[in-house]
Length: 196
Image (cartoon, rainbow, N blue to C red; front, side, top):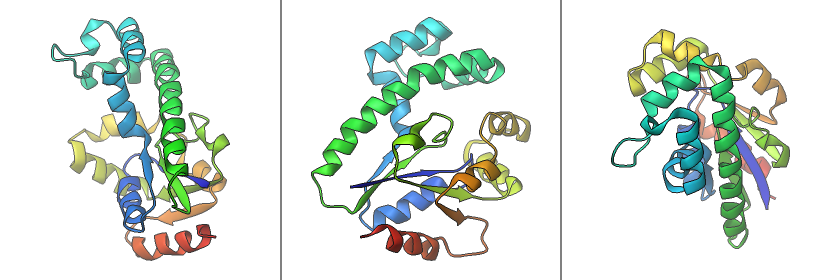
């Protein structure tokens, strides 16, 4: 079974594109969403995060204190590196379990969605990579609308990601999500190339 990665920088519209692939019956592993779940479910990961960020990394109900972690991680490159060093291996193990389950089904390929696909090294075990691209001003507008962050906060987080141009240069397929072309048509075009 072909393993395809899909990535793009913050606000590019990866999730929307993945939903279109799901309509075509392609299984999608949402790495960023699974990471959030694993950060509260996997005991070793929880312990490592508490060691790194203190007990205030979690609320009293056991949920992740995202604001606290984001504030600490995005202001200290070493803390961010250590956090990624804890989370990425846990997600990689989880992905392998998920992929093994998908192998038993008859989809022509699977999609692994992740913002930090290249940064985490996950691209090395994937057969093809799709990058969803959009101009920075559009991406900033989308993120502001989605989570209410300020432009300064968004740019600080964007600066931690690989530049979009570099991702596009390394991609096997690029989906332009700037409103100039139909997303559905672009997805179907790629889908037809991936189906044997």
